[in-house]
Length: 368
Ligand SMILES: [Zn+2]
Image 1 (cartoon, rainbow, N blue to C red):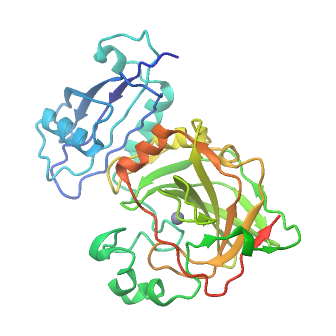
Image 2 (image 1 turned 180 degrees about the vertical axis):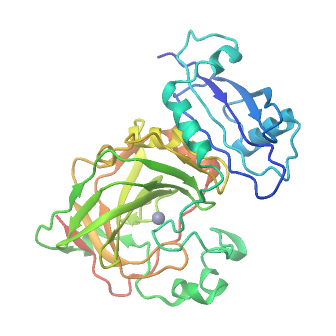
């Protein structure tokens, strides 16, 4: 494929006048890399049922900040940039040789993206992001916390009584894993049973999270944990021999007793990651939005490395309330993610990694 990329940004439902307005939904698919990409935007809004949708064409550069692009689209539509906070851009790629006219391209939405768009819209007003980037109420909290400044990691424990483990916990995550001091134990395989699933991509203001439906389980320590969601951090929260990776995916599971087990898949720069490509396609750009993926599109077997040896230790959620008794399973072999895939995430979340926490005598087991 040549380096030409054409993206069509579709926006719908932006013009809702009331603050209780429906969320906007969309989908995006992305080809890469494309230095000379021409992005064309077509936007539509329906302020009320009786009002015909408005459209506007907006030219934006591929390097544009998504938020800035959002403002451009709203401006073109004559919408108030302050009250209309929710905006999801639909990006669609076309191979080179596609019609030069963005309007033509806009009409050639692939069936899958169009279908997802409609499904997303149907649920727009009713769905809110599920609480908790780590399966708890981590991201559902009404207390504002961040990764820098006065509400950053050093302050989390003081923001709310329920967050005090962030300050006083003795088994906190993330940690630096030192290979030389990890305990070489007998083999304890980590058994994955993942299958094609339906999912929704959520921008929760702290990360991009994918809420997963269906029976995806891991079995470890004689217990079966069901996958709830996975999400991303950049850079990786965990360090291996004091080295961070560009990103990490945390796959959050829960067993019947309510215990959490998080599988960390380290991501290093390389080839395009097919799973992340699918997820980014449906990535909502505005905090609070969620976009459903087409049924059974997601297959997390595609995210796992071939070598599934791992480090095992007890830790915590890495976000408030920093709850402990979380079983951490960090896969040793990283999988690849492309530079432009990393960039798409870091444009939204340039740094959402908690600093490493003291081991406090904990053992890290090298589960060969
Ligand atoms: Zn995480």
